[in-house]
Image 1 (cartoon, rainbow, N blue to C red):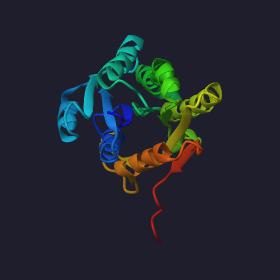
Image 2: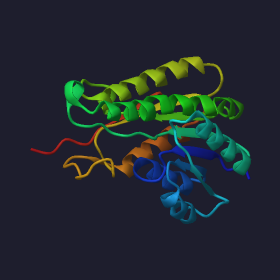
Image 3: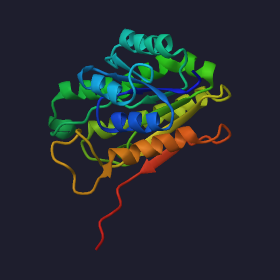
Image 4: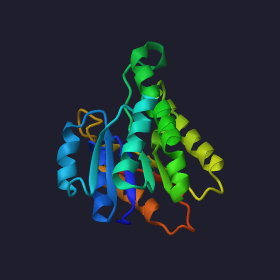
Length: 229
């Protein structure tokens, strides 16, 4: 089977699950990675079973787990054409002066270190396929948000994206940063008043992936439409 293979971290809900659905509709086979496999099983069934989708339990903060994720994808599908490093967590109140520092550790390990591990684990496979690396950044990584370690972590993701693009220049691997503003996902306890749908972000991911090989979409900044007066 020659259908391309897309690996998605943070695939069990929100942007990751929405991207998996849209990718499957467009002919991709998908490897779905998340910390818990409970919700992945139903998504695999929805997307056509194990011939089309693979559930992988993965802790993105663990190097061995990430390498196993890539190895399992290659063993199951025989190829890896695109990787969407999407796993991430939000912040906590308190700013830099008063926040729970243990939460900072989780944010930085997941949002920054985890992205680095995903790149490291998948780089050789992507070079072999001349594939595509997509990173979930954020509009919060393009502006100053007082006291936000989450914003700082997304600034770091932007830097990673710029840096790995230069590192991979000439390899045939394209690198795209997807930078959404507020998205209505399980990320929030209460739905935001002005927000994108997770499907909006998924469409941006698939737009980048679907460009001809001569076109390298470096960044997509996507914000909710402001309310009308």
